[in-house]
Length: 356
Image (cartoon, rainbow, N blue to C red; front, side, top):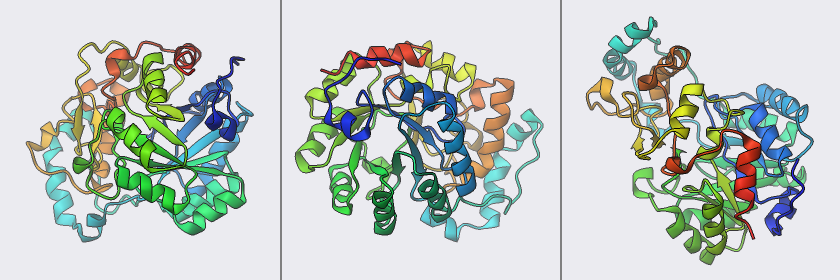
């Protein structure tokens, strides 16, 4: 565990050594080892638990606590389905599924059936979070209800909400959330916009950050486009109280990514990424491949979340096993050419030296 200390009020409030937060990864890309390694290095490890139920979240927190006695965060999606899902029909599902017929055959998969999947229940997930009481509860795709925020305060759980625009950041503060994550368009993974469509909320981190800082009084955490000490220093100069790092931690051996995904991040030179709804139905940033560019559907519109995930989930899982890069979900931010460190302890030391 590092002994260097950063002079940060945010770090003191979170009871961590350095104001560095590991971005939470959903879909199995988070890992207990990654969370523990970041927290044990003085940052705040985070686990993306939006696919888990309440009991699984409690069990997850027990496993994390066997590896670290330091604070960590559990992250959930406030909105676990798109509004359009309520009007979605079986014929629409089958029509889209037919586009993936050759891909299912390629991996020897049975096409998923209508009605096999059900979105996670956020309220039931929150029961698990409140009982497990992690140090931090972070959330995306909206703002948790006043009752949930009150319950977190009563249990001493700090809250962080993601915002992609000034208006969202102001709404987060007005709701009583403890801290706001200003997440710029450069960031990998899903765009967590909630007041306007994600396509209309693509503000870059270093334009968004100072504007959010000027409009809210709560601590502001910068996310997107940061992978080394230079990005950390720049974020601090623009008013950030701390930083959240995603892609650089995704490339670490302790993460839940496949070796092929990690190699694609560490060896990437051109840094080209794509924003797409094709993988899950929600706008997210990936390295471009057949899956993320929606090639199998020949341009047909993706289904609402999570119906699109019902179609692509088996494909992603099979591609991970067979190491097929064209049909893996290769989440990545625009900062990928700066990703250099395959171990958490080395990456943390690189990031720490950027904070003055």
